[in-house]
Image 1 (cartoon, one colour):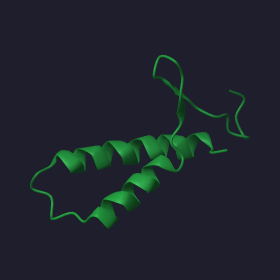
Image 2 (cartoon, one colour):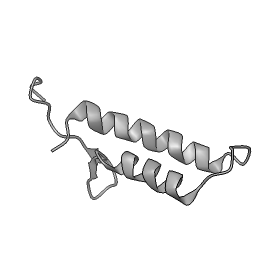
Image 3 (tube, rainbow, N blue to C red):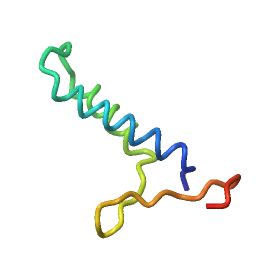
Length: 64
């Protein structure tokens, strides 16, 4: 189970990764590099509900 801050960080990493994919001026990409970044983004990615909204886990130190 991932902690909430890990899930938020995963969402931020995914957003940055997707923006980098759209940037055509980015240095040449290798398949290995893309796979590693995609894997890192998905490692703590939150589960989505039926409406597509993320369901964040509860941290052990909060009362959410």
